[in-house]
Length: 141
Image (cartoon, rainbow, N blue to C red; front, side, top):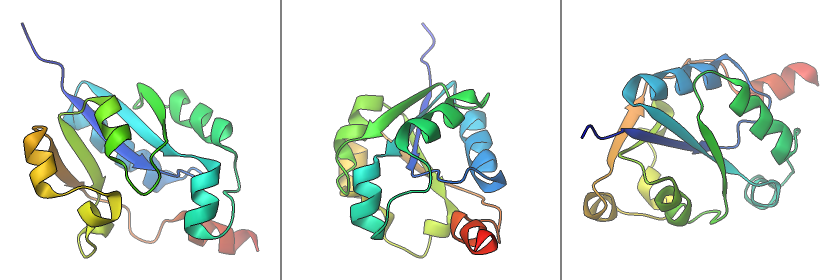
């Protein structure tokens, strides 16, 4: 029996742009199924100090409309992403390379030992430089 490779990525995905598309495309290249842990509006407002431009269901619908995303689940744990990751049952957690200089594991509430215990690979994905939701918001004013 062949094992399905599940790739998990998480984020806010507000003001969907080409950088998001490229991240999801790479996720799809890594496995058979892509599951996105989507930050809730409440979490985004608490974490960033302001609500997302687009509400959760709008962001979810956009993600599901892409050919790269198979499922979207709410990141119900907020800063502690372990419950959401375990719900997705991934083989791989994929994140953008912009996290290379940050402690991604610490920020998401897990350790490399936790990943090993659950047989999850952490994979850094090349990201489009100069494309971000923050930049788009500045363009709009």
